[in-house]
Image 1: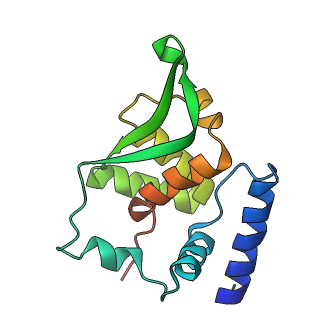
Image 2 (image 1 turned 180 degrees about the vertical axis):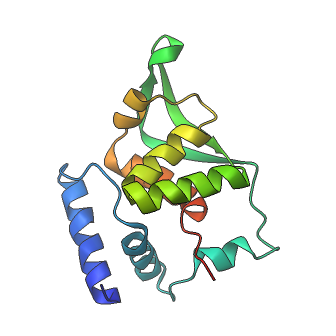
Image 3 (image 1 turned 90 degrees about the vertical axis):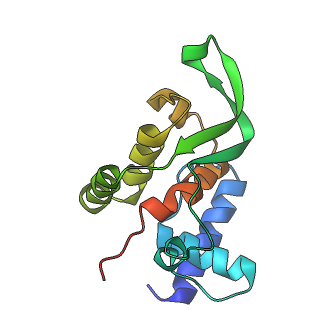
Length: 149
């Protein structure tokens, strides 16, 4: 798929999400093309950003939710944000294997469940709105888009 096709696929996904139809994030390459288009700049490699010492990786990543979710395990407490911890190298390798064997969406799903600092459960994850799931996926993408060099 060339860059124009990725952008077209991403725009179709955005339209479906806005209409309430899409519930899962687009593939990372489509998402990266949309981000580059929105930023008006060139598409950058996530791997290059990870290696930039001026941009250290935080110990935790907090994602503010547009639509709060109810934490079932916490007596129905509503959460306005989710926090994820950075993975170990072993977890990165496992997530990459999930991505290769089961696909990107399953890898994002597994990453959110594995790296949650909020004890996120599968039913709670499944209750996320599409845009909130996309924001979580974007925050965790650096751990899923490692390229062999």
